[in-house]
Length: 457
Image 1 (cartoon, one colour):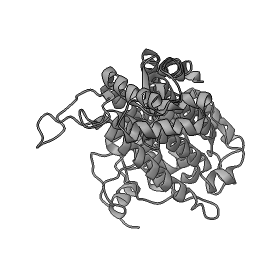
Image 2: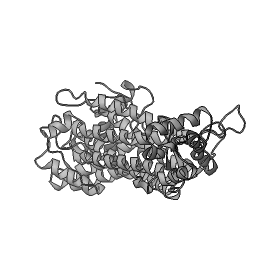
Image 3: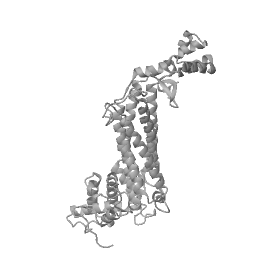
């Protein structure tokens, strides 16, 4: 294809440089964690090839040494490619091959770009194709990012919400359904529901990630394993498992592993499943903290920064708003993943870079968002006890406790009397003549109406 100039201070080669020209689209770069995972894949391949006698041990050790630098992020400046490239990820795979080869050549005292004594295709890519190495790196990085970055962040948020729930388990508040007054519950019960929603979502995410343990490596171009020796797929999966400490195994059907990306779809769906309750919790907190004087005003959120450039003293629920935006972005990312994964025509899915980029984007913003939401909002949130008591005492829906004694119709009549004549529920009940003061006091006790702890009734 002719000559092309490559920056002398970079380790990449001609294929990477051509990609920078042909795919200079937008500002979206391939996520660096993918390259770090690719370092693990390339190291594993080199060590397996050496163990089976296909590569000199010294060369495998040299490739492994540079691959460790890649994984540690020491060569991040040499991975410049855009997301919008060939759908197989070939440019990214070759970017990794070229960087590892040229850095190894440099360490061996050779001339960068000479492909001697380490060749990007023949050595670094030995026994591999972009078609199986890229989805292998996809699974590795997605699994590691979920387990190492996202899950700990969500667990800490759940723990904080649980602690608030325990603290406020006996604080009665009025419930709301359809955004209208309902029967009472406690603040702790409400918060325990939030924690349980996140626990369920996290359980589902853990289950969804299990498909990521199956690796496409060894399928090479179309799943047949051409140019990979017998046993390579199992051996490289074992080596990746050893290097990462995760139970990676070879995918049982390489044709499925290359033509479809269902494991990434499941992982993305797990991320979506986490975003949904986070969106609900953030919105609930916004509603309950609305005010301070003309809203619900049940919660007092931490004051982190001024809320308005024109209204002095205004403070807004900014962390809640950020979480809502994060959740909606994750929902959009998941839709992109689903559509892209459906484009696995014939023997290869060629939408891999956009799927990977969206999944990692979702993981990163969910992890960071959960951390900030916890530290700058949930941990410092307090309740407005006088406001809570005011709502409980003024609620007409406590009339529900009268139904077993006097029936639904008479209870409804009392409620209408209270609303139409702006009376307290007790005054309305006495005005109706259906029960006396002592009976009302016996039946209508908000604390008796909330059940016990998180079990409710």
